[in-house]
Image 1 (cartoon, rainbow, N blue to C red):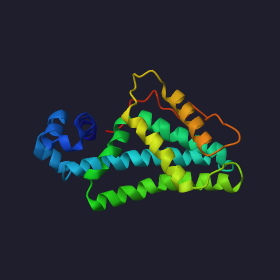
Image 2 (cartoon, rainbow, N blue to C red; image 1 turned 60 degrees about the vertical axis):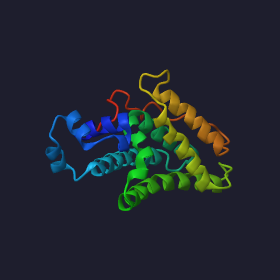
Image 3 (cartoon, one colour; image 1 turned 90 degrees about the horizontal axis):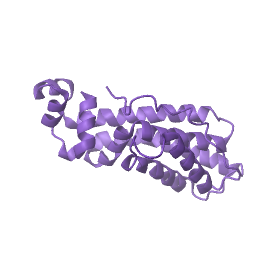
Amino acid sequence: MLSGALEVFYERGYHGASVRDIARRVGVTVPALYYHYENKQAMLVTLLETGMGEVLDRAWQAAKDAIDDPEQRLANLVEAIVLYMTDWVSVAYLDTELRYLDPENRKRYAALRKQLEQLLTNTIEEGTENGVFAVSHPDDTTRALLGMCQAIATWYHPEGPHAPAEIAERYVEIALNAVGARVQRKPTSGKRSTRSRRTDPVE
């Protein structure tokens, strides 16, 4: 059911999608859909939280792989986020629909997203304290880097000219330049890519 909801949300936007549209796409009746989900927003929330759980898992693992090296850790984190954006592009795109969440759901989702922001901010602060980065405002830098990565979902297409690993490498370079890294690192890459999986593995 969620895969059908995801397709409809991605094609028509949350506001333009109806429960009837989703039921038709899934091949069930509207009452059957309501048996599993209270309303349309419940499906959106489930998709958003599933996606955030995925990117957080990737980010934590990326950070652990370079626990003592903030420069490599930042490279790994940006790579992990970019590859999430390309592997799960339809789910990642739903971030543009946050305005439709009610206050309670928005607050819960914001708390999850804050974990990702904090992981980046801590890395940038550590690198700055160690003299590896030259950053005056870590919080603003984190928001800029995340905004850059999140925008990928608005233009990326799996059949496009650039492979996910290539995009990740470019964005890592941009991120390291943004923090004034003294040595530019390559991401550990393509290792985190899940190109062989289907896009947006949501059941």
